[in-house]
Length: 175
Image (cartoon, rainbow, N blue to C red; front, side, top):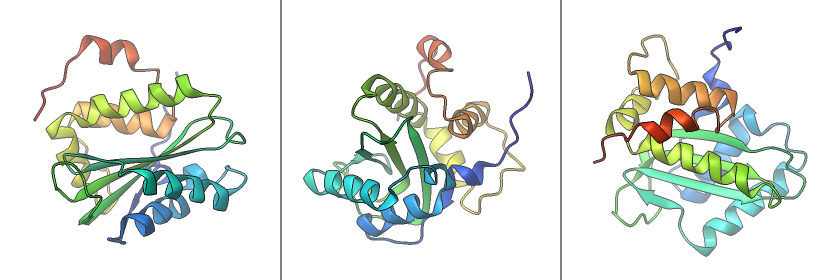
């Protein structure tokens, strides 16, 4: 099997905004993974509209913002890394350093849930969250943590069900 070229900058970016709405917009604008969504402004509005309903800050320094549009053909996931942190009014009161943005179709609920489940399982691992934050400069030469490596490959491939069997057999340590 041909090795996927590692260009994590297609799915990861550095976020400089500290306002949650601006940070969401930044991830959508900067991460190339969203570039094939035909109506970026409408997608951005959908994500921001969802965020205004209720915070997507889930705790542990993580937020998973999402928006759905019928014109989105496949699930798109981008990750913004924030060194300073973003106030998402998360239940635990912690600032968000890992901001995921998911774009999907309302007709692809199973694919959306697979992506969400895969992300949740990986980010439960304290070591994965810490390792991701080490890459705030988007330098991946020294990636050593195997679970973080698997997570980055999953993000790059945008195939969130590929690791489902592995994930079902492994319970990561929780905080």
